[in-house]
Length: 235
Picture 1 (tube, rainbow, N blue to C red):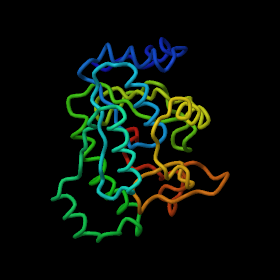
Picture 2 (cartoon, rainbow, N blue to C red):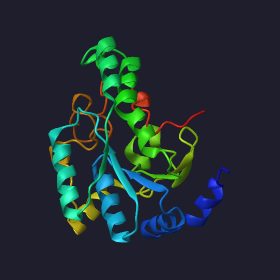
Picture 3 (cartoon, rainbow, N blue to C red):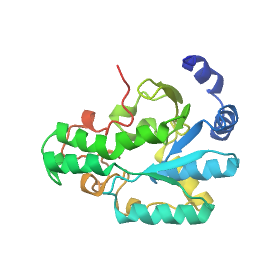
C-alpha cells in the first residue's frame, strides 16, 4: 500500500537529519538503500549514515565514463569507513547497442541521444540496484537547480514504487561544506577546481563564479532539461 507521504512529512518536519535517518533505518531495516555519486552531499550523507551504525545498502552507479577523481574519492571513502560500496555498471550488450546507434559521443547531438545514453549508463543500472528496496536515500537539495526547487523531505517515487528520502533537502551549500570541514569528510577534488556538480566526464565542466551549481552539467542544454532521468517524477 502506498504510504501517506503528506503525513510523514508533517511528522518529521522539525526533526534533525540524524533523527530522520534513525527513523527510516529502524523502520525499514533490510529494505533501505543509499545511492551515492560521491558528490559533496553524498559524502556528508555517507558520514552521517556511518555514525548511525545500522545496516544499509550503499551503492553507486559506475557509468564507465566517470572522472578519475571520482574513482579516487570512491577508494578513499571505502578505506576511511571500512566499507565496500556496491558498484552497478551498464550491461555490455546495452553499451554495444548504444555505440552502434550513436557512436561514442552521440549524446552531444540531441537531447534524445543524451537521454538514451543516461538510460543505458544510469537508469537501467539503478533499476537493478533498487530491486527489493522500499526506501531510496538521496543527496538531493532544493537549491541545486530549477528542477529541484519543489523537493520534499519525503516523496513517493511512482516510477520505482518506493519512498524517496532526501535528508539534506533544505541544507545550503554552506551547510554541506561546513559539515565536510568539521568532520574531515573525503570529497571529490574536482570541487576545488570549480565543479560543484559532478557527473560523467564528457558531460561535466567547471562553472564560473556566480553561475548556478548545475550549470556545468549538460551545459549545451536548457536548464529545464538538465536531469538524467534518475530523479524525474512520473506524471
